[in-house]
Image 1 (cartoon, rainbow, N blue to C red):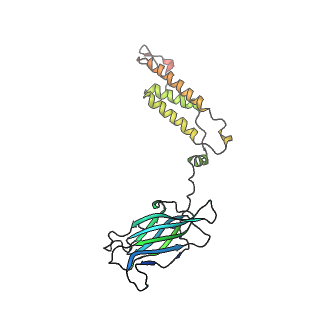
Image 2 (cartoon, rainbow, N blue to C red):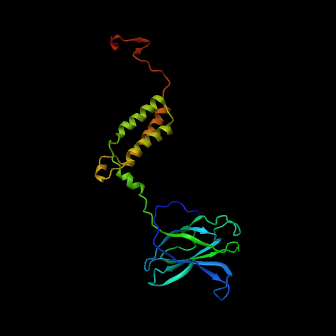
Image 3 (spheres, helix red, strand yellow):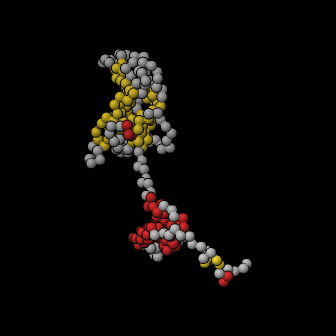
Length: 261
């Protein structure tokens, strides 16, 4: 509930002097009920949607917030409603813990939506006889502002421009076959890597649809990769273990195959 820093400016409002409820009929009766009412009014014809209410406590133990709201469907029709009941401001009414702290009552704490509010009534209670005077100071109202919708991911992806042409599909497939044949990596890992490389090239789309011309069809790319993967599986199953020599025939070399450097 402690007030935090906020760059939103508070709205203009009028805070009326506190009115203490007396026990008795005469003005000279000094007995008080421990209840005080503070009214906060807004300029006529300018209701607001409240984001939060901030104030500094002065020995008030509990506060109840009531709102005078205008009904949107009925022009000029207003109704009082209770937004918050007996919010504790002091740790103990008989001790001074929290008696002069700053507080904030946020929109999410209220039991009703604080929209189209024309007036606020703060009902203060102090059941302890140790504090004859209690009130709230520096009362401020902050308006609720709708947050701008976040920019969708697709929007900023469309802003990206492809600076390089996607690699030729045949080149990728040839590299895959070479890696598969010479190094014999894990089939699934190789297929996943090739698919990731291919898909990443098509994820970054230019702004204009005309620049997409010339790119291979994704379904064709997927089908070709799967066919190549099946072909390499057949090659792997039929792979020979015989050693292939280099330039030698039956352990001898043909002079015509050699060159002097």
